[in-house]
Amino acid sequence: MLLHLVKKDFLLVKKYVCFMMLLAIGVPLFFAWRVPAIGGVVSFIYTVTFTELIICQSVAAEESKYPKAAALLCSAPYPRGTFVMAKYAFFLLLFAYCYIVYTLMALIVPGIDAIDLTMVLSVLLFGMILYGIFLPLYFKYGAEKTKFFFMICIFAISFGVPMLYQSFANISIDFSMLASIPAAIINTGLAFASIIVWGVSQGASILIFSKKDL
Amino acid sequence: MRKAGEHVKILISNSSDKPLYQQIKEQIIDAILKGELAEGNPLPSIRSFANDIKVSVLTIRRVYDELEQEGFTTSQVGLGTFVSTGNLELLRDSKRHMVERKMQELIDMAKNLNITKDELNAMMDILYEEE
Amino acid sequence: MGNILEVVGLNKSYKNFSLADVSFTLPEDCITGFIGINGAGKTTTIRTILGLIQGASGTIKIFGKDIEKNERELKNRIGVVPDDGRFYDELTMAEMKSIIAPAYSKWSEKDYKEYMDRFSLNPKQKIATLSKGMRMKFALTLALSHGAELLIMDEPTSGLDPLIRSQLLEIMRDYMKRGGKGVFFSTHITSDLDKVADMLILIHDGKILFEQEKDALMDGFRLVKGDIKALNAENRNLFLSVRENEFGFAGITDKLAEVRRSIPDVLAEKPSIEDIMLGYIERGA
Image 1 (cartoon, rainbow over the protein chains, first blue to last red):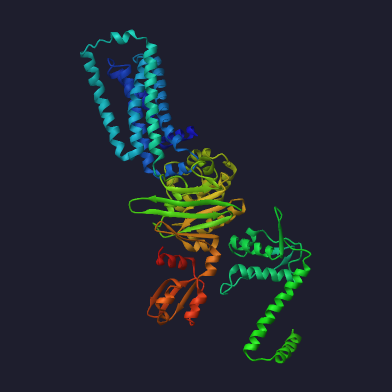
Image 2 (cartoon, rainbow over the protein chains, first blue to last red; image 1 turned 90 degrees about the vertical axis):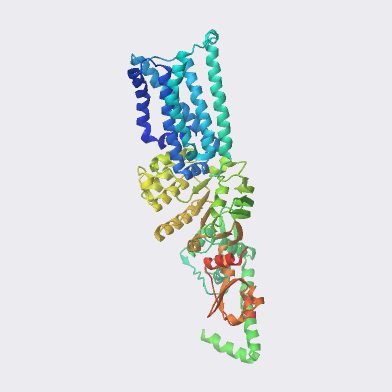
C-alpha cells in the first residue's frame, strides 16, 4: 500500500525526474570543478537540499492543483496514516538516491571527496528537521501558504552555507572534546535524533491529516 | 411476464387511481385464476420482472409478498416463487368471491338507480347469451 | 433482507451551512436516488459517509457494520464515483489506475479491461484530455472493477448529454443484476430517477424532507388543478404547496379524496418527481 502511494508522488512529478537525476550528478561536479576547496559535505548538502526542496515542492504543488484526487484515494481503502507515511518514505528515498549517486561519483571522479557516515547522518538530520517542520505545516495550511517555506530554505541554504563555512574557518572552536567521542556513538546519536524527528513530525502530520476534511 | 412459451400481459395504467402494486397484483391473480399462469410454475425473479414492466423492485416485492400471504404463491428459499398447487378450493373460492364482489357492486348500483331484481335478472339473461 | 446503509443522526456544522439530524436507511437490492437542489447537502452527506469529512456526530453503518470501526474493510466493498475532477489530470488513465487498484483486495484486471473496452477508453490517454463524459466513464470503470457491493455516486450525470446519462442508468440496472447490492446516487436531474430509482430521499437545507419508495410516492401524490375561488384556509392544508395564477391554482397533495370532498370540481393527474420535490421544498421542513 505504502509503495503505491510513494509511486504516486513520483508519477506526479515524472516531468522533473530527469532533471532531478541530473541535479544529483551535476551539483557535486559543479563543486568539484568550481569550488574545489569546499567539497565533500557542503556539496552533498547542496545536492540533497536542492533535490529534496525542488521535488517535494513540485509534489506539493501538484497535489494542491488536484485536491479532490487525494479525496478519491482516501475514499479507497488507503488509510490516512499511510498517505502521510508515504510522503516521508518519498523523502527518504530521494535522500538515499542522492547518497548513492554521490558515493558513486566520489569513486569515479577524482575531484569529489567521499563523505563519511557522520557527515551523511548529519545532513540527514538537517534535512529531516527541515522536512519535519514543513510537512505538518503543509498538511495544516496547504501548499499555497507553505510555498514560502521552500523559497526561504533555498535562499538561506544557498547563501547561509558558504557564510557558515567562512565563519567556521575563522573561529577555532575546540572540537577536541567531540573528537574524543567514538564515531559509533556520534553516529548512533545522529541516527537516533533523525528517527525521533521523523517520528514526531509524522505523528503530528497524521494527526493533522486525520482531522482534515477532504 | 414470460414463462414456458406463454405470454401473460401485465398492463399498467398511468392514469388509473389504483396504486401500481394493486394493478399488478390483480392482473397476476387474474392470470392465475384463469389458468394462464399454471399451478406449480415459477414466477420471474423480482428484478427481471421489475425491469420488464419498468417498475421498482420494491413494488414487485410487495406484490409477491402479498400474493404469498393470500396463498396464491409460495416461495422457496433459493429457488424462487411459484404459483401455488393444490389450492383449487382456495382458488375456486376466490373465483366465486371475485364474481360475488362484482355482483354486489351491480346490485348496489341497480338499487341506486331503482332497477328491480327482476329487471336485473332479465338484463343478465340477455347479456350472458350475447357472450 | 437487511439494510445496506444506515445513517442515523448525522450532524455537522459549517459557517454557512449544517447537516441537521440527517437520518435515512437504504434497503438492500435497491437503487436509491438522493435528490435535492444544489447546496442542499447531498455532497456533504456523501462525503461524510465516505469518511472524507471528519468531526460529524451520528452513526453510519454499512452492511450492518459501523464505519468508524471497520473503515478499511467497508471501503473495500464500496465503489465510488465522485463528481467531476477527482483525478490527477497530468497522469494517464493507466497511471491513475496503477495507484488506485492496489488499494482494493478484490481488484479484477479482467473487469477493468472489459469496461475500458466497453467505454472505448484508451488507458494511455492523459486524463486532462478526456471529455467530461469519458472521465465519468473512467471513474465508473474504477468503481466497478473491484467487486464492490455498494455503489455510491455523487451527481454522476450532471453536465452529461442524454445519451451518456441513459447509458449510465443502463449500467446501474446491469450492476444490480450482476450481484450489486445497492446503488446510492445523488442528482438534481429528477427525470433520471423516474427510470431507475426504487427509493427516493430528498434533502433540503441540510435536512431530510422525505424518504420513500418511488412508486408509492408517485401513487400517493397527485397534481391537482382547479379554480382559485375554491381554495380556503382549511383546504390549503391538504396540499404540500400551491401555485396560483390568474387562471387557477395547481397544488400537490397526497390527500386526493379529502380534496375532492372539499372541492369536487378538480382535475387530478399524476405528478412528476420534480413536482413532488418542489412541493416539499416549497412547504419547507
